[in-house]
Image 1 (cartoon, one colour):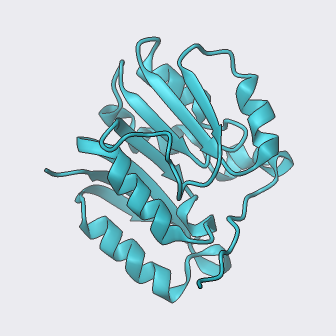
Image 2 (tube, helix red, strand yellow):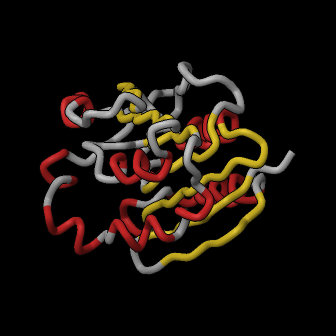
Image 3 (cartoon, one colour):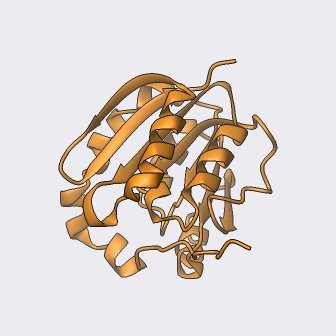
Amino acid sequence: MPLYVKDRYIPNFLLNNPLRSTLYRRGKILARFSEVVHQGDTVLDEGAGPGFFTKSLLELVGQNGLVYAVDPNPTSMYSLKKIQAQNLRVFLGSAGNLHFLRDGEIDFVFSNLVLCCMGDPLSGMKEISRVVKVGGHVYASISKGPFGMGELNQAAWRKFLGSFELLQSGGGLTEEWALLKKLG
């Protein structure tokens, strides 16, 4: 029987720290994918934390869209539930078990530095592939270095990227990212 390794998460006091906005400029990250998210879309904010990107995603989809925010940290639920939006659905859980979503339900998946924090990143990759609709888009990024995915999971990351059309990709010293499109 495989040993389950719990997803790790960053405490909210670090995610809400103003220094984070300096290191991970929200506008720069949003610019990588904002052209593929439209008013009325259904979006998954995977590993939403306290909502650092959730409000921006809500603005992109507008009042007729829907955002699902998922995070394994119970403390994040308090912050996410404070966001006053009729079109926000908040779920406590792992990105590797999105049982509340149907196959092909999501127009856009936002998975920023999540897969590398999962005890089982393969389950997260499978769930992304399952819930995004044909023609839908995925923005995924992973950490490099000591907080990265390890050699075995790096191979899975490459395979995951290869199962989509690669629209853009990039990276730096601390992260690697890709904007993907699901083909039929």
